[in-house]
Length: 518
Image (tube, rainbow, N blue to C red; front, side, top):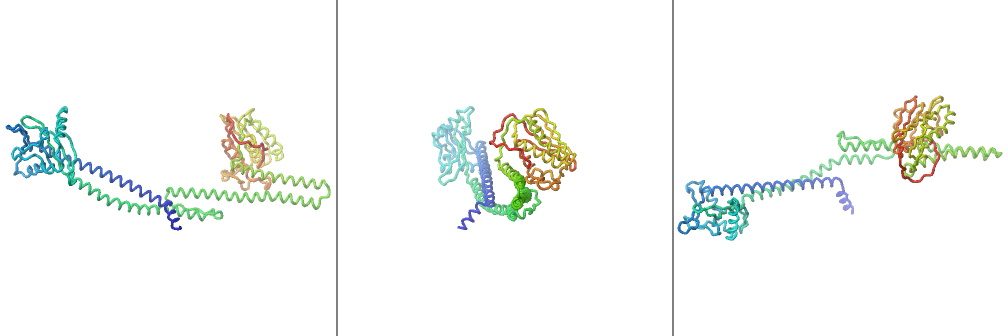
């Protein structure tokens, strides 16, 4: 059973699949090359065989073979003219006469005018003499062409022993009456087939050896290529929540694997940052929840043991309710964040006058701003309509105003400006507060993030670091953009651009909730 699982694991492994891919590639490549070379070699050998037969044909018609009419019988006779003492001429004629056949236009075999022998070689008889009817048809077809053809065609014939012959047949005219006669000559294809067969045998021996070598090389190269991946996997196994600071060193090869390692390291960095934020958030939430719970418990215990009048009990209950409201605010913020992350907090867009919304919210913040001795100003056009979720837009502006007032010192200014642009509405919230250092700006929209050392009022006034996360989510949900510019000691400016739209976006119904500072 274990052996079967190991085999399945091997077959499913990336190394096996890469090696199989190499093997299939080599099979296709070498097979294609072999077929290409075999086809090319066969074509070359066929052309060489035809060239040799054409040379013999030209030599035959050049004077070695003459067909003359017998003056007594009127029948054509064949005469071979060559110098028997010349070895070249003798060899040429004997080569031609090895495979040849001469007949008149009716298919009757022509005899030699000197010896009286029939002009057909034994090799040609072995492959089969052409039928007279076929000869008559071929001669008539050649003579009927305009102009008449002397080449009838090429064909391959095989004798009883299985030897192939290349045959060329054509027309040769008699000397006196210029009558057409049928002549066929050929050569055995054994030497050419032997070359082709030797090549096939050589390739049949080379290809398997090359495939085996390629298979072994592919297995080795795949293993070498996957070694860094296995090292990355082993390093990844050592990474856990307790040692997220571990990083995988790159190979300095600047290849795809290094890119994978860098991407993996960046992912671990993000996870480490998220874990740190979660730890900080857990500590903050524990503190934020423990403080009001402890206060409530203390107030109720004091009232239980020391209160003597109804007024004392009422004061204790009022203080407890205030702390309970604080708990409710925290729980509701966490619930809204969870809904936003899971996609359950859908937008319910309607046509809203943003000018009216901004004016109302600025008016609501005038009292807390005056309490902090901060000047709150607004620049709002008469009307700026947009398709937005009013509840979420109010929450967005409320969070920005709350932070601006909170972190602006006495005598400072907070300015809200609304402008109607081409197809968009721009909301700018600018303050003259403490500002945010440049290294903290990329993180201010992260969940649970609070700028270190910012603000002078720890505890309830500092919040949970969720407000700007909600702002970023609301802007993104409306397909808008948000930018932040800040200079320490001079202030911060948030610029939000929202598409005004002309159509309502479908969304799940969401109960109206008052804007809340989180």
